Image (cartoon, rainbow, N blue to C red; front, top):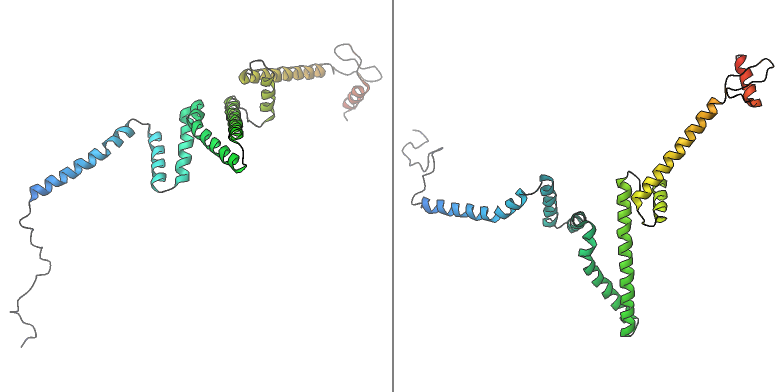
Length: 240
């Protein structure tokens, strides 16, 4: 007698496919999926339209900011905003951030004045003083950036000797035109180089062809040669 029971009921046949779902409202399911797709498309449509008008490099840069902001890397995000804000605003950059910074300067001066037990009039004077100092620093930094940009534009290292010479020359001009001062410095350098080259060429021509054997050497210009030049000529004539 066999150990197996060929007539025993079988619960499932290996490899048999699961029965198909029944009573499924496929139309409602399809309509719900379509609505989800529409919502997703509408959500990202403004982003796609905005990025579609950007240069690929600009779009990539903005994505870098978004990734940094989303990941909580606030240092990178803030640095990105400041750097790109400065590049976008140009000379007007300080005008956008100046009011907020002035408010910080004012608040700090007021806190210091209160801690020092100053009168309201003295606090007001302190605030005015700090604001003037702040404006002076902002103006100075603005011109420093302009000077550096002009030097770099003309191919100068801002901390080089030629750059310093150009800045000094500009400070002596009534119009303080750094570009014109740079041209003046370059023209002066070219003139000096030309004078040096001419002087050396004249010196080489004055050497002439020496005459030895007891006869005083005369150069091509009819001038007597110096003792040193005559000595060198004798050495050359004797193959030394």
